[in-house]
Image 1 (spheres, helix red, strand yellow):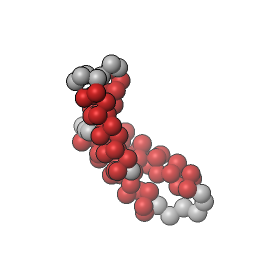
Image 2: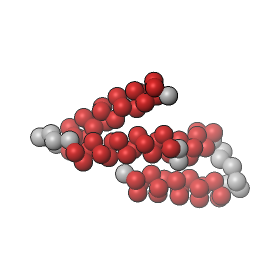
Image 3: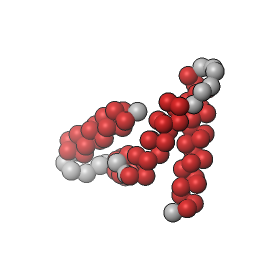
Image 4: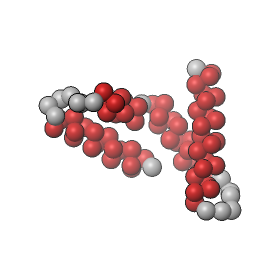
Amino acid sequence: MRCVVQWLLVVLQWMYRCVGGGFPNAKLSSLQKVLSSDFFSAVREVYEHVYETVDLSGSVEVRANATAKVSSATTQSLSLTS
């Protein structure tokens, strides 16, 4: 997942340069800020850790769904305590 995020940031940076130093859409700029934020990195790390350690029998989708729910709950508790 870390590689995918880094790749997306590279693509967004390339797009930024190609359009002359600005995004035609404010959402792209927001996406770039979110993907490069410390908070997003922390959430991604929690997701990766839970995904690697969770012991569920079932498909990859079941494991990913359970991991996402735990990560979401963790994210909500982090934002409430900050």
